[in-house]
Image (cartoon, rainbow, N blue to C red; front, side, top):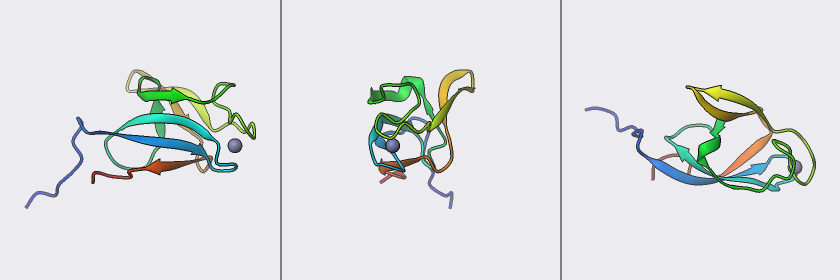
Length: 90
Ligand SMILES: [Zn+2]
């Protein structure tokens, strides 16, 4: 039997918070399952940052601007954020 996998049309909403101080950074519409390694700019529903890519509370930089598959994205710096919400298809 084929293993069930998350299709590319599956989206779910997660909250991205600072790993250090737990401040909310983004509400994000994630595509597919797996670990959050980047946020597509177009998928960000709410942006709580005041300084781009920096935590509004503790000031640490948590991501870098990048192009992923030709789309503007923020690449998460490993270990700098925590994800609250679904980690896979429920
Ligand atoms: Zn922080």
